[in-house]
Image (cartoon, rainbow, N blue to C red):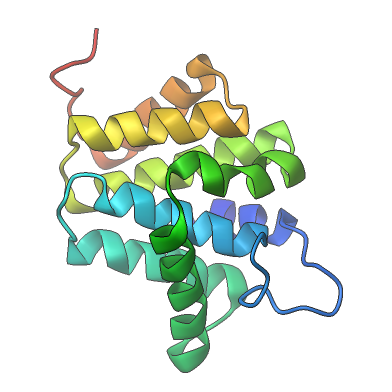
Length: 160
C-alpha cells in the first residue's frame, strides 16, 4: 500500500508557486478531503481510519508534525465547506490518469477497512467518489476485492 500511496500522491500536480495546503482546488487537498468524507460517512470517527489517513498523507508528502497537521487541517476545511463529495472530485478527475484514479479508489478502500468494518454508507460513498472521478464499476469492485483479500476480510452482507 505504501508504494501505491507514494505513486498516487507523486502523480498529483502542484500549482506553480503555491503550497498544496493553500490552493482551494489543489488535488492534494481534495484527496485529503475525500478521504475524510469516507472516514466520516458512517458517523463514526475511528482512530484507526484517521491514523491510516495521516499515514497516507505523511508518507505521500514526506511530512510529520506541524506540517502534516497543516495538510490535514486544509483537507478538513475543504471537507467541511463542501456541500457534497461531487464538489471535491473535480480536481482529481481533471488531473489523474485512469491508473491513478483506480489507485485512489484502492486507497479509499484501505481507509474504509482500517477499522476492520465496512458499513453500507462507506461502501456507497466510495462508489460515488469512484463514479465522479471516472473509475468504472468493474475497477472499483476489483480494488475493493483486492483490499478485502489482502486483509482477510469477508464480503459485505449486501454484496451480490
